[in-house]
Length: 367
Image 1 (cartoon, one colour):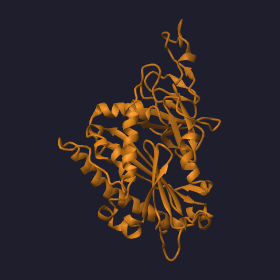
Image 2 (image 1 turned 90 degrees about the horizontal axis):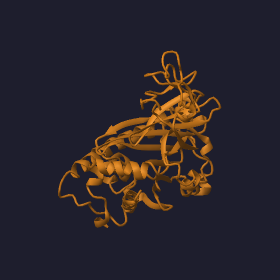
Image 3 (image 1 turned 60 degrees about the vertical axis):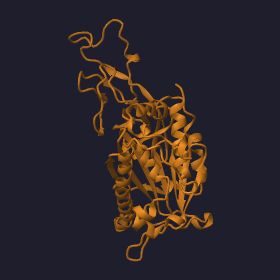
Image 4 (image 1 turned 120 degrees about the vertical axis):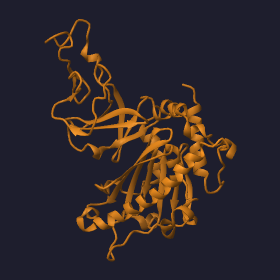
């Protein structure tokens, strides 16, 4: 298996990251943000997909739209920070203004002093460049190519596997975890996809859910998954958080499962909460991670239950700090001329191997 793994250049070369941008992040569905990032009409949320600037907008009809975050005049980054707009999106450079549906509304003095248009200029052709955009649960997915299969089909293997969970009960926690690490984005995904390292890297976590309590599973052709049979809910003063209904019928009372939605979205379902974990490349050796947590029902979100909600968040923060040290050291190792791609445990790292093969196949596809 080792001979077919990704080489060091897949983690260290700018040219390889550019291929990933063109052949993966621009062709597959990518989670660009959360609907709850822009809860109200007029909310605007700039973000990036593999270094490509986009902006998410909730228009006056509550429809979420996605656009390339550049003014059509001179290419200025149109929106720099999350905000709420009362009118439209105004470019701060020359005051070109766009409606929230992307239509170009005004171009002051473009034809000369106090002349907002000129012969041959057609505003209808200069609106913001739209990006195909769909939502599942709180997650907003974009397809930069406009040619990916329907999102529902792309997510169907995961949706079917988790069909017994009532995700309509999920409520977002205000506290989240964001951080940067000096490692390639794929190393974070690979680390999330296997439990082989638990015993040595995560002593606290391993006391709750041991390496041998974990299992891997397939999720369609392109996504990968693993799970734990020994998840235990946190307890504070003899009390635990509400759990999904029907767990006993599904035999999932102590089961947690984690699925990597190709390429860079990692999801975790537990009896009492749901995790959304996004990792995005900044450069070949730098990435940014975001973890958002959702709990089950309104009762879970009371102030009295805050300490219980923070238990898993604190554990993930600790676990991720431990992981980052490892993946940064793996990044360092890939600078060695002796790194040959490594090898994989045929039992405990099948998911990592599959992920790498999916990356390799996608990058090698001719445009």
